[in-house]
Amino acid sequence: MSEPLKIAVLGGGSFGTVLANIAAENGHAVKLWLRDAERAADVNKTHENSRYLPGYSLSDTLIASADLQDVLQAADLVFVSIPSSSFRAVVRQAAPYLNPNQMIVSTTKGIEAESFSLMSQILREELPHARIGVLSGPNLAKEIAGRQLTATVIASDDAELRNRVQQVLHRNYFRVYASSDTYGVELGGTLKNIYAIAAGLSAALGMGENTKSMLMTRSLAEMSRFAVCMGANPMTFIGLAGVGDLIVTCMSPLSRNYRVGFALGQGKSLDEAVSVLGQVAEGVNTIKQVKEKAAAMDVYMPLVSALYDVVFEHAPIADVVKMLMTNEQSTDVEFVLPRENP
Image 1 (cartoon, rainbow, N blue to C red):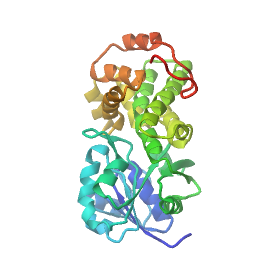
Image 2: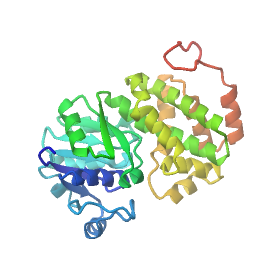
Image 3: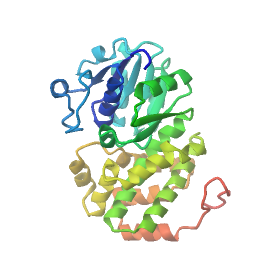
Image 4: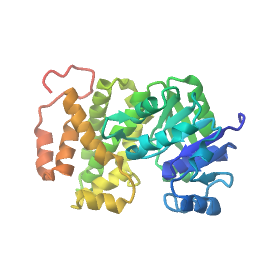
């Protein structure tokens, strides 16, 4: 193993916790920041995150703290695992304790509502001299905590940052692949949340395997089309951060967004679906944000529009499905044939 590093993880949710634990297992000095001092003390006492990962033991060397300055002091690498709605505020709070060329990696899969900024863009705005990366992939935290074989992607234009993250997080059950397409990897992780809601909704309605296959394939086409208009590489979407993340999120009841969609398909209101979940489901807000952005950029996204109608306009699901199936037919594989009349 390489020389031990000082690692800071901001955010004591399920994914932040498993990343902190992996780094600690690898012999690094890891501090995990939680907002609540009582919860931090409980993690240190029980070596378990009882709120987000009950039943999973954490490394004895992992230290939780509500003191942001203490967590960030002299950190070699910082992971930010904060919900998108609070991301900028926490980064601003952390800024005074970071060195000018700090390596910072976002693991958040979401978009800031007010500005339509990705988390890497927020980092660049708030920390203009930082070295920035994003981590994304088919990564259900409970499966990682259970040491089930998993892979992820670290994306950055900084080769040293990519290498460092690979070294810090590599385990025999967790493999980290590299990419230079930061926006593509980040958008893949963000956009798939939308389609996971659609997948959960269709499952609750008892739709068949043909429907699931069609839904995921057209979702991949739609999200890659949007991402390319945002500057991403379409090839990124055939990898772990694209189709890989889409598959796991659309097929697993462990996915928060899938569970929101399933509740909606059972007839629950949006508020009921979200309150039962008890955690942030990024896809709900992302639907609205992406619909508005797609309209502004004139990007054809029928699934996003349909979901918006169901989730926010209370449109009858049967009517929306009929509309989708009678839309003008298009090409199968995006970027093979030009779209003449979307």
